[in-house]
Length: 518
Image 1 (tube, rainbow, N blue to C red):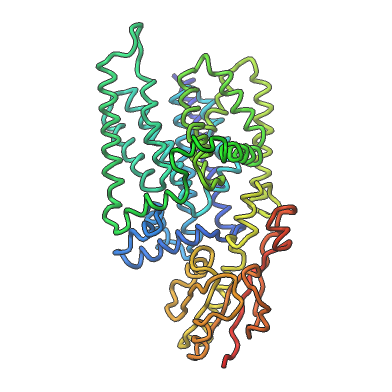
Image 2 (cartoon, rainbow, N blue to C red):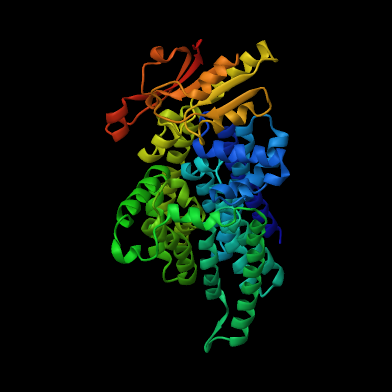
C-alpha cells in the first residue's frame, strides 16, 4: 500500500509539473505580448465587446456565420482585464490547459499506463503547435478542448453504462457545436466509442449495444438542444450560408478528388514537421505500427479521430491553415506517446523523446522572446507576422490616438482605416472602445484619393486621421494632403513568396493626420 501511495504521489507531482509548465508557456506568450493582434482575433474581441455592452447583440457573430460560444467566453475576461487582447487570449490559455488535462486522462483510459499519460501530457505541454494556438484569441483552442472531452465522456459512458457520463459527453459535444462548425466531426466520430463495449466469445451482447446506443442518443439530444440555442439569434441561417464559403460541395470528390487533397495534406505534413516538431512525426508512425496488434481498438480509435477529420478537411476545405486542424493534436499526441508500450525499443524512444522536448522548448523560447526568428510554416508566418492581417503597430497607433484625445477631450476625433472589418478597423476599435469621442470607421482599400468621409470630417472641424498599410495606398500620400505621423514595420516577408516579389520585402503600417482641405 505504501508503495502504491508513493507511486501515485510521484505521478500527481509530475502531472502538476506538466500542467504548470503548459500554463506558464501559454501565459507568458500572452503577457509578453510578443505577437500583435491577428485579423480574426480583432473581429472576435470586437464582437465580445459589443455583446458585453448590448445584451440584445449576444448573437452578433451569427451575422458572419460564426458560432457564439467563444465570443461569450471572452466577455467575463473583458471585465477582469484591461487589455482586450490579453482577455481574449486567456480564454484559449485555459482551454489549452483543459485540453492537456484531457490528454493525460484519455491516455490513461486507453492504455492504463501512467508513463504514457505523463509523456503524452509533456508532449502536448511543450509542442509549439499547441503552445502557439493555445495562446491566441481564436476559437480553435476551445473547439479542441471540447473535442477531447467529448471523446473521454463518450468512452466512459459506453464502458460503464452511466447516464451522467453520457450527459457530460452531450454537454461537451454541444459546446463544440456552439464553438465552431468542425464540431460536427465529433458528432460523426462519437459512435466509434462503441468498439469498447465488452466482448464475449459470442460477440457483443445486444442488450449492451442497445443500452450504450441509448446513452449516446442522450448525448446527441443534449448537444442538439444546445446547438439550437442559436435559433434565438436573428441570423441563424447564416451558419449554413457561410459554411458554403469555406467548403466544397459533396460531389467535389467526384470532380477533382486529389485537388486540393494532396496539396493540403502536404501542407499539414509541413505543419507537423516544423511545429511538432519533426521527431513527433516518427512517434506517430511508430505508435501506429507498434500498437496495432496489442492495442488494436485503442490505436484504431485514435487514428479514426485524428486522420478522418484531417483527410476530409483536406479534401473539402477551400482554405486550409494550421489552426483548422488543431483539434486533432490531442489524439495525435496520445498516439505518438503510445510508443512507450514497446519495451524492445524503449531506449531509442527515450532518446528521441529528449530530442523532441529539447527541440520543442527551443522553438517555444523563440516564440516567447523573438517570434520573428522562430521556425514557422510559410503560410502561417505570412498571415500572423507579415501581411495586412498582422497587427504590428495597431496598439501603438491606438495609444497615439488616445493621447490626442487626452490633449483635448471635448474634440471629436475621426479615424479612417483601410478595409471594413478585420485587423483594421476592428483592431483599433478594441483598444479605443471606451472613448465615445473617437470614431473609427473603415474607408476601403487601394486608396488613390482621400475618402469623402474623411474630407467631410475635416471640414466639420474634427481631428481626422488615416491608418493604412503601405500596400493598400495607391497614391503618394503627399498628393493626398496627408501628414505622416508614424510608421510601424511588420516582419520581413519570406524571400521567394509571391507577396515578396509583388509587394517588396516589408509591409509598413502608416498613421497619417489629414491636413486642411478645401
